[in-house]
Image (cartoon, rainbow, N blue to C red):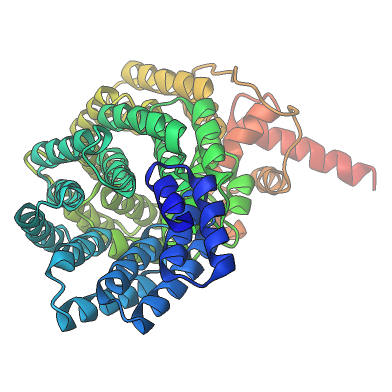
Length: 550
């Protein structure tokens, strides 16, 4: 009777009641059903490690009984938990292997479709959408043959994810929508199905740049979360909503969402925790708060989600040679034919241009150019055009303007102000040789966006470029103590006084030219100087004063 009460509470989403009831059963005897149920309740309560331990004990008890169907089902749960919550793919594969063996040895046809679903999930995670599509279709056929509604909805969701990965955004999104409607509409026998389909939809739409659809389903999932409280789903929604807010220029709101995701902690959802941390580090880098970004990523360098942010960090700190290996490792994990893959390839182009390796940069940009799906995400196209424009600008080719203008138009349509402003700066540089007025207009627009967002270093660089064009460009953004130079900025100022050019300063300090430009722009702002010449004169005067007082 007590076991039945616990299972009823579990089915209705009364997690604390279910936990207490299952624990009461286990005080009397070690029942595998009670261990299995307690493991589920603990997962919903955010105690992932304890949940896994209970499920593993349940699996062993079901094997001893023996109860092959329940043992196989428990192995499937463990496979998915190790993958989605803990990011332990080796353990996930191991538990899938145990489930497969049981299904084959005992001819457990009813669970065969779930094995296929697990294979589809693994293939989507491995950026192999064609394999994921094959397994998801097989799982869908099995679900319809056995009238398993939960399996059908999960298979539809994984198939939608696979089709989006293959570039069929319209059909893929339609399947995700259908799976969400069925799950949230009450067609499921288990609430776990709602979590799987919701997480899939939010992640796929966010990563494909389909921000409006992602936000709509996040709101729907939030209503489910208010009723049932899944830490896993909550963390996924908060992380990706934060990412969308960051991309669309609502940075204060983005920070709140990402911090909410981080509150779940490393123990409950370590994989998602790392993803939220990496996205917050990206926000810090965009704000120019490089030291804070470095502290956030410290200790997470080997976590896959940190790859992109770490690449930006290395480039920002002048460690250009270290950028490419980091980016390439992450590219192997996510594949090039994805929105994240396109961002990584563009970052690689930027690093190669910074190093002056234009031949390799052109080859990388051409790889990015081949990702043009007929109905693919516009965000991939925008990054492709900007990467090509960056390389052509670096090699002084007039064709850069057309590529940068197309990239800018896309970022504007996507309502991504930070990326649009970064593109305007490149376009201003490309236009500078053809007409000062157009270059000034683009740079001024970029400066206004950077200041509104709080992108301090980018704003400094845009203001410095305007001053180089002979335009007064005082910063209006909120700053710290004006005039308080950092140690690196003092070093740059000293070398300016010695008459060194930016390339020579970069070589002397072993940092990138772009980083030198940022430091020079910051020095000009903090010391209220209008040009590089004024900075040089200032440095010489202060060197003379220091010498006179010694």
